[in-house]
Image (cartoon, rainbow, N blue to C red; front, side, top):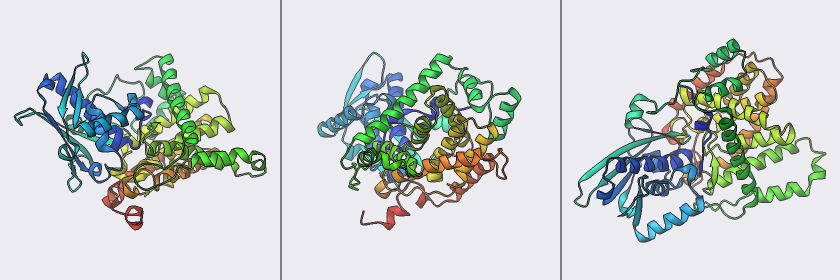
Length: 463
């Protein structure tokens, strides 16, 4: 099943696609299900059970508040960060939660005490995936009305129990003309049809929407990424969560603007801008701002930074930026299908590593690379992120996540340049490196997979 560019690039809120956007989506789906069953008016309480990684790092990732927002009927793409913060404050203060199952605008208010109704089961893990969340709706007599378990499998993707058993969403969308399962098939199909990877992806997108809608959707993604960079370069202060990490992007931006003439003599000055743009996005993400999963929130700064690098230093043509996104999505879909983009499952190689690989491929395509060079760039991007652990301090998407995005963006540019200096032939295929990443994730101890139980998370206790 081919994955759409609009599934991989989703507008949402920070700080985490798997731990914030996923639980918000799951909660919204649950309350809609209760409403569809006709039970909404009978609900007296809703209990939320968080398991595995969602419980271990959920407080730092705002998983509890995301679940509250989702139960009020809001999906990540439509959530306004400031309004959501005010809503959560009212719910926690009043201990009253307005359930909104959609349809006819009916809202049913219930008692809700976060300390009583949200359960943190960090010592338990459900079989399908480390990121599991269960909702239980009961009536005034304590009788269970509806129960639902959902899995947040990375990048904002959510599966319920039936979908998890089938390992596919219930509504996969219309069939596409090029349903490639791996990179070898992608290259073969594109070669036989005489298409670039971006053209092949556009043909697949046409199965569900017209070109005008495709372009409008891609422009929305680009505009949201640009707005996130610009907002991140303006905002100052301390990031939330208790680590007291200062926002640096605004200060770095001011410094770069002040020394523009001197930078003309520095051949590496472009790196400073790329670092700035990546930092700006991930500081916004850490603050709970509006971001685009690329393919996750934890790695949301890499692709926007490399896109802006291409736009500012190579070509601002919107069509080339569309080529970048379509190509990057083709590569991201391979990781989603054949490995994982969930740090709780495979470590940060599944987030920053995948984003680096996607960005390298997109940049190579935008710069006119062949399909073989694009595949080579994607392979290089991941090969040098293999084994990357996810060990956030205090479960916050701040240290090492923010700087890691800057490093990933630079690696992506380097991977593209290396690939463009060759003819696309290389020893290790992209399919082999994706399988290696999957196996490395399976071998990796859970301590290093978004649990905050190992690595930097425990070796810097003074933080």
